[in-house]
Image (cartoon, rainbow, N blue to C red; front, side, top):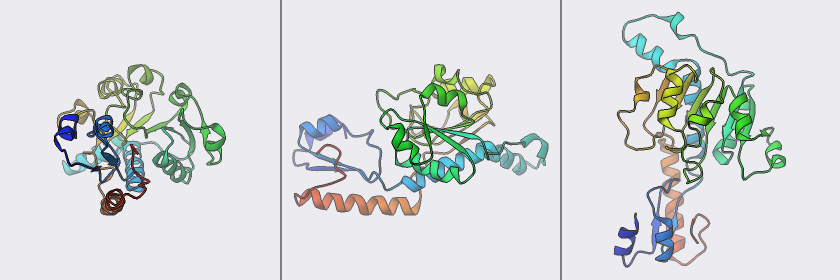
Length: 260
């Protein structure tokens, strides 16, 4: 929904997104037209967190290339030696609801968790058993990095060439948040040069994406934006947004309105 579409819809009162991301909605244009924009911000928290964890584990244990090798008729156990997550350091970039859920679950794996989030206090984060650090410190000390940031002007290519020059060569990086926060070209370069061990990617700067150079790498496990693709998350999103639309049209307060 861009400005042109919004201005053409003269009777439009509500734009509802049965999910979280609003990259495809011109929120300032909607606000100027007095159109309420609604999403379902908590609908996919569990599903998104679980996918990030799945990608992390798949990368650590070479599950994608090992599966492909076995299907090709090979039994190459020695080729796919992985790494444990136990007692490793997990760096979470963006410590909102999804990042916090990932932290909670991965602490149960015995991981040490650190986080970067410029909008949270160290005191608040410490109550969750997590240490808040600057981004540079996170990059230098993490064995696994998972990104949980929205795509904004400030976060586009936040994890790019400069950031990737600071990580351990043994690091595994996961992005199941928003495409464009992780610079895919810089990641490809870092992996092929041996500066990043592996990655799990679910989101891309341009979608649909079917021809990324990353797809050619055994060190990358990739999925087609499946973060919210569970029956439970889709049902939850539909119910949540339907309740919000009803409230909006009835003139009631709408907690999930993003521009009201």
